[in-house]
Image (cartoon, rainbow, N blue to C red; front, side, top):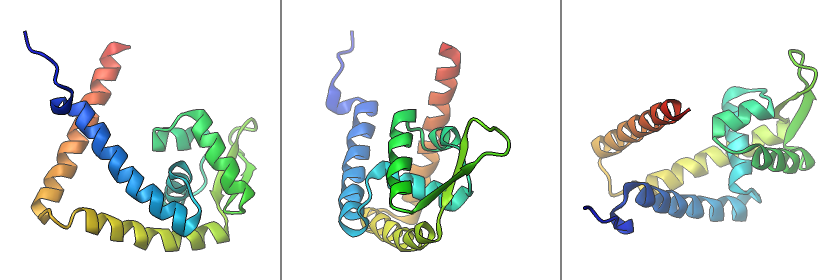
Length: 150
Protein backbone atom coordinates (compact mmCIF):
# COMPACT_ATOMS: atom_id res chain seq x y z
CA UNK A 1 0.00 0.00 0.00
CA UNK A 2 1.27 3.44 -0.91
CA UNK A 3 1.35 5.99 1.88
CA UNK A 4 0.31 9.54 1.21
CA UNK A 5 3.19 11.94 1.80
CA UNK A 6 1.77 15.42 1.78
CA UNK A 7 4.96 17.16 0.64
CA UNK A 8 5.07 14.88 -2.41
CA UNK A 9 1.31 15.09 -3.13
CA UNK A 10 0.93 17.12 -6.33
CA UNK A 11 -2.36 18.88 -5.42
CA UNK A 12 -0.77 20.01 -2.16
CA UNK A 13 2.38 21.27 -3.92
CA UNK A 14 0.26 23.16 -6.46
CA UNK A 15 -1.75 24.74 -3.65
CA UNK A 16 1.39 25.77 -1.75
CA UNK A 17 2.99 27.22 -4.88
CA UNK A 18 -0.22 29.05 -5.79
CA UNK A 19 -0.58 30.46 -2.28
CA UNK A 20 3.03 31.65 -2.20
CA UNK A 21 2.83 33.33 -5.62
CA UNK A 22 -0.58 34.84 -4.81
CA UNK A 23 0.84 36.11 -1.52
CA UNK A 24 3.67 37.91 -3.31
CA UNK A 25 1.24 39.46 -5.75
CA UNK A 26 -1.31 40.32 -3.05
CA UNK A 27 1.31 42.17 -1.02
CA UNK A 28 2.39 44.18 -4.05
CA UNK A 29 -1.15 45.01 -5.20
CA UNK A 30 -2.31 45.89 -1.70
CA UNK A 31 0.66 48.20 -1.15
CA UNK A 32 0.65 49.80 -4.60
CA UNK A 33 -3.04 49.85 -5.53
CA UNK A 34 -5.03 49.06 -2.39
CA UNK A 35 -6.48 45.96 -4.04
CA UNK A 36 -7.08 42.49 -2.66
CA UNK A 37 -6.54 39.48 -4.94
CA UNK A 38 -10.25 38.99 -5.82
CA UNK A 39 -10.51 42.68 -6.69
CA UNK A 40 -7.50 42.74 -8.98
CA UNK A 41 -8.73 39.57 -10.68
CA UNK A 42 -12.05 41.24 -11.46
CA UNK A 43 -10.27 44.36 -12.73
CA UNK A 44 -8.12 42.25 -15.05
CA UNK A 45 -10.99 40.10 -16.33
CA UNK A 46 -13.13 43.17 -16.96
CA UNK A 47 -10.26 44.87 -18.77
CA UNK A 48 -9.91 41.85 -21.05
CA UNK A 49 -13.59 40.98 -21.49
CA UNK A 50 -15.60 44.16 -21.11
CA UNK A 51 -19.01 44.21 -19.43
CA UNK A 52 -19.86 40.99 -17.60
CA UNK A 53 -22.41 39.79 -15.07
CA UNK A 54 -21.26 38.71 -11.63
CA UNK A 55 -22.15 35.15 -12.58
CA UNK A 56 -19.91 35.32 -15.66
CA UNK A 57 -17.14 36.82 -13.54
CA UNK A 58 -17.45 33.90 -11.13
CA UNK A 59 -17.06 31.44 -14.00
CA UNK A 60 -14.13 33.35 -15.51
CA UNK A 61 -12.24 33.68 -12.22
CA UNK A 62 -13.33 30.39 -10.59
CA UNK A 63 -14.31 32.40 -7.50
CA UNK A 64 -17.51 31.78 -5.55
CA UNK A 65 -20.51 34.13 -5.65
CA UNK A 66 -19.77 35.73 -2.28
CA UNK A 67 -16.16 36.50 -3.16
CA UNK A 68 -17.16 38.00 -6.53
CA UNK A 69 -19.94 40.03 -4.89
CA UNK A 70 -17.66 41.45 -2.19
CA UNK A 71 -14.94 42.31 -4.70
CA UNK A 72 -17.48 43.93 -7.04
CA UNK A 73 -18.97 46.02 -4.23
CA UNK A 74 -15.51 47.21 -3.17
CA UNK A 75 -14.64 48.16 -6.75
CA UNK A 76 -17.96 49.97 -7.31
CA UNK A 77 -17.49 51.84 -4.02
CA UNK A 78 -14.08 53.03 -5.23
CA UNK A 79 -15.54 54.11 -8.61
CA UNK A 80 -13.32 51.59 -10.41
CA UNK A 81 -16.27 49.58 -11.74
CA UNK A 82 -19.71 50.68 -12.92
CA UNK A 83 -22.90 48.62 -12.67
CA UNK A 84 -25.48 48.88 -15.42
CA UNK A 85 -28.70 46.97 -16.04
CA UNK A 86 -28.23 43.84 -18.13
CA UNK A 87 -30.44 44.25 -21.22
CA UNK A 88 -30.43 40.46 -21.71
CA UNK A 89 -31.50 39.69 -18.13
CA UNK A 90 -33.32 42.33 -16.07
CA UNK A 91 -32.52 40.43 -12.85
CA UNK A 92 -28.78 41.00 -13.18
CA UNK A 93 -26.35 43.81 -13.87
CA UNK A 94 -23.33 44.13 -16.08
CA UNK A 95 -20.10 45.28 -14.50
CA UNK A 96 -17.46 47.13 -16.49
CA UNK A 97 -14.40 49.20 -15.72
CA UNK A 98 -14.90 52.90 -15.26
CA UNK A 99 -12.37 55.29 -16.75
CA UNK A 100 -10.63 55.31 -13.37
CA UNK A 101 -10.70 51.52 -13.34
CA UNK A 102 -9.13 51.37 -16.80
CA UNK A 103 -6.40 53.77 -15.66
CA UNK A 104 -5.74 51.51 -12.67
CA UNK A 105 -5.55 48.47 -14.95
CA UNK A 106 -3.07 50.30 -17.14
CA UNK A 107 -0.86 50.60 -14.05
CA UNK A 108 -1.51 47.06 -12.79
CA UNK A 109 -0.74 45.18 -16.01
CA UNK A 110 2.92 46.26 -16.29
CA UNK A 111 3.47 45.51 -12.57
CA UNK A 112 1.91 42.05 -12.98
CA UNK A 113 4.20 41.31 -15.91
CA UNK A 114 7.21 42.58 -13.96
CA UNK A 115 6.43 40.28 -11.01
CA UNK A 116 5.90 37.37 -13.39
CA UNK A 117 9.30 38.04 -15.02
CA UNK A 118 10.99 38.13 -11.62
CA UNK A 119 9.31 34.91 -10.45
CA UNK A 120 10.25 33.09 -13.65
CA UNK A 121 13.77 34.53 -13.94
CA UNK A 122 15.25 31.10 -13.26
CA UNK A 123 13.20 29.40 -15.97
CA UNK A 124 13.99 29.19 -19.66
CA UNK A 125 11.37 30.20 -22.22
CA UNK A 126 10.92 26.52 -23.07
CA UNK A 127 10.35 25.64 -19.39
CA UNK A 128 7.79 28.40 -18.99
CA UNK A 129 5.96 27.25 -22.11
CA UNK A 130 6.04 23.62 -20.97
CA UNK A 131 4.78 24.54 -17.50
CA UNK A 132 1.89 26.51 -19.01
CA UNK A 133 1.00 23.60 -21.31
CA UNK A 134 1.13 21.16 -18.38
CA UNK A 135 -1.07 23.40 -16.22
CA UNK A 136 -3.63 23.70 -19.00
CA UNK A 137 -3.63 19.92 -19.43
CA UNK A 138 -4.07 19.49 -15.68
CA UNK A 139 -6.99 21.93 -15.66
CA UNK A 140 -8.60 20.00 -18.52
CA UNK A 141 -8.10 16.70 -16.69
CA UNK A 142 -9.70 18.16 -13.56
CA UNK A 143 -12.61 19.48 -15.62
CA UNK A 144 -13.14 16.03 -17.17
CA UNK A 145 -12.94 14.40 -13.73
CA UNK A 146 -15.55 16.84 -12.35
CA UNK A 147 -17.86 16.12 -15.29
CA UNK A 148 -17.55 12.37 -14.74
CA UNK A 149 -18.41 12.75 -11.04
CA UNK A 150 -21.69 14.54 -11.67
